[in-house]
Length: 111
View 1 (cartoon, one colour):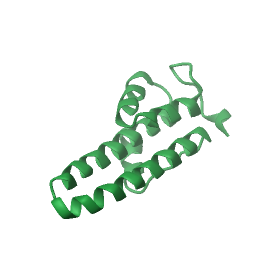
View 2 (cartoon, rainbow, N blue to C red):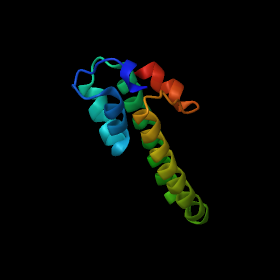
View 3 (cartoon, rainbow, N blue to C red):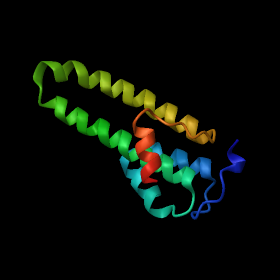
View 4 (tube, rainbow, N blue to C red):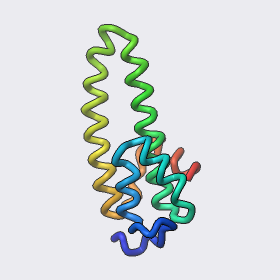
């Protein structure tokens, strides 16, 4: 499981570092992308966190300016974001390189 994920430059287990990159979304994603220089698994999850939750944040801001539609869509996006956040943390902790559609490929290229 998480044993074959290599070493990290932080000394933290790779699966734990990957999980932590999701904890505060974009913020912890950026932190782990900056401090982790070696481990591709951790860097992938950090970049996926940045793109995913940064994108969802921007989408929610855009919908906030659309009165009726935004009032319906924003709660749906919020619930979906929460579910996605939990799933991504669980998958990363299990040592799985769980790639989201579109975003996962973008993260893989950037990490």
